[in-house]
Image (cartoon, rainbow, N blue to C red):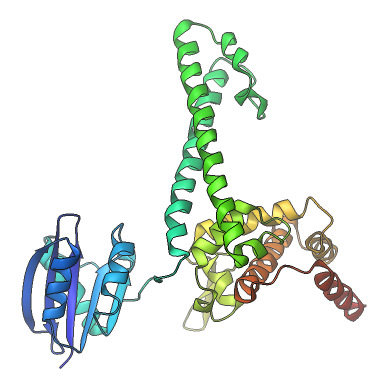
Length: 342
């Protein structure tokens, strides 16, 4: 008889509730959040058994511990778990999770015990630093704009003397501290890029990604960290959807209610749109493809998104094959498409 285990994870303790195939509660127990205590409880439940818990900061630590201990492991996105009305506490949440697991209402987010998984921690921290730099730069420019001073461009972040134009000692003090914070954060970000460069040299798939126009060391490392295993995507269309590069029809009773972008990985969307913008600056096959699309009547935004989709599809193929991008091959494909169109 299968057992369904709900697990509510916290930094100090974990709550477990086990139900059978009829939904009858068999066990409810709280244990300390340690590998030994968690394994002791899970191993005390005879197979066949399935376990579910919500995605959190502890998920990456728990996944390799539990993946071989149960017949099915579901790490679900809490945003997609139907909330039970009534008072909220660890016990009721865990019972509800176990019952949702029993009913087959939970979908698992991707986790893998893969060497690229460690990259996710590095990439996440890099994104935090980048967001902090953007925030500090906006605050710094706001100081000057509040005094009706011009503050456009990047030069202002390198011009320390510009702080003297602020009206008084207080504004100048704040300006100096923000200037120093930005400079320090930029140095920290540069250290992260050096770490990324080590991974580029170490792993052929990341190195191959950098051969793509518009894909820098940072973008290549971030793609590898997010994708981890290209086999998790059935085809390029699934990958486009995950990267938020396509819109889906909303239909009901045969009637269309417009198109919508599903909520997925916004970071990948930013990477591929940014890569497309960068690729359009040069004379690569992506630029030629973009020009063809514009000639067909597409506006800049639509043509750029098509270029982003093309870069995404090739990125997925590169991660599968570990082969570098071949510009000549893409140029020949474009020439063939021109001949067919004519």
